[in-house]
Image (cartoon, helix red, strand yellow):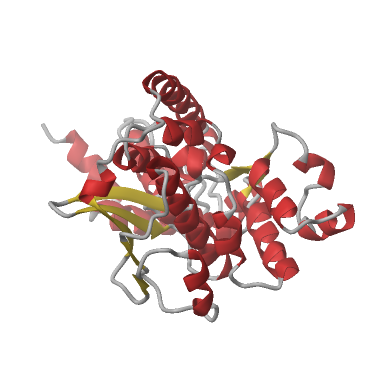
Length: 335
């Protein structure tokens, strides 16, 4: 999932809710942002602030189906270079591939992938967030913006497919009929938009090959720039590497990154790891490198890694490698 969101999306939420300055302040309550920040094009919003804004938007709208409403009104052009790429695509297949291929541009709150068989193009959507009020908002908005993109490419309403929803009916389930044009059902094994293969291959009458190439070049550039900022796993690794000898707690790492501990746990889980796993990897690697130096005693290595209790280091080492650090040093001496 991306850790930052363009202010454009929150600005469009404020517009959808028709908020004046007082209403915008209510939308941003509990965040570090001001209404003036929403007018700037260069502002990125951190995940915690964005989640707070979504909860405020749901409260201000008084409608738990606000994600469906907002997504249905979100023009493809609001997605910048990614929207341009979708618009210029040769077919629905190419447009869906663009959504799946550039996660940093569309927001890394869900994994999107494609499969196809003789009858269907399947667009699978897996939330990287718990499906609470925020996670469900994102999923509903993604469903609606994807439906809108399909209609833009086809030049007609998308009612010939089917939509599988991999979660139970929410309290506002009745609202789905107002927004989803295809047959749909809840409690499916996973969330997926299924498009008849003939429809997916229908040429886009407004396809622009030159515009597509230019938009793809720009998407590649932006995606690479955002990827270079690194995910949370890379940021945590960099902190651990930059401060050898300091046993950071998860709470300290989260505070240094400007996150709550719960949010850090969620981000790392979305990237397939945990803080303890990363800490163990960093410490075990440092321990092996230090113990390989002949003059480094076990006690000295323990202190260099931040352990004030040598017995705690010995227990950790045995957990990592299945042997004591003394046995490891002895093993290194063997020809």
